[in-house]
Image: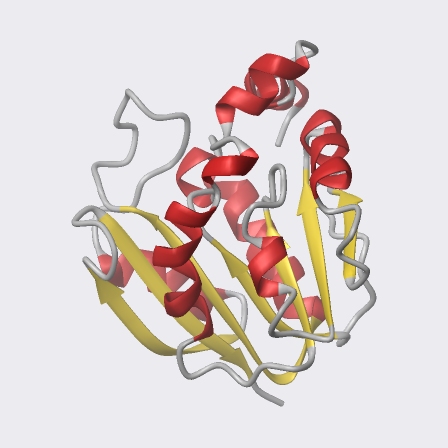
Length: 205
C-alpha cells in the first residue's frame, strides 16, 4: 500500500495507547467465544501437523488454538503494537513465531509453509492491490500442494463503513487466487456469517 494508506491503516490498527489496542480485538479472556466458532472452519479438511501462517494475526487470538494443531504457527501483522500484545499473550506458546509485514512482503522463506489462513482481515485492507500482493506472497511461501483459506466480506466495491475493499461476488474473490497461480478447490458463502466469502485454494506445480 502507498504511504498515505499505510499511515491511515496504522493510525487505526497500531494505536500508541495499548489499552485502546486491546479493545480493538476481543480481550484475552473473551478469546474462547470467537475462536470456538472459527477454528473448526479453519482446520476442516486441512492436513495438520506442519507449518501454518496467519495473515493479520493481531494480538494472536487465533494463533493460540491453531498452535495446538501445527508444529509451528507463524503470525504476521503490519502493526507493531498488536504484535507486542501477541508476544505477551502467547509467551507460553513455544511453537508460535511472530513477524512484521513490511512493504507488503512476508518475512518468510519460499516454499516453506503448509497452510496459510486469514479471517476478518482482508475486509479491512483498503487497497485491492495489497490483497493481490498478499496472495502473491502466499503463493510464494506455500509448499507445493499447500493450502490457503481466506475469508473476506461480500459487498459493493467502495462501500463505506468498513476499512477495506469488498468483493461483489464469490466469483470475483475466487478470481484473485486464480490470477496469482493458485487453484481454487472450494468457494463458499455464508459459512459463518451471511456477508462472508470463503475461498480455499492450493499451490500446484
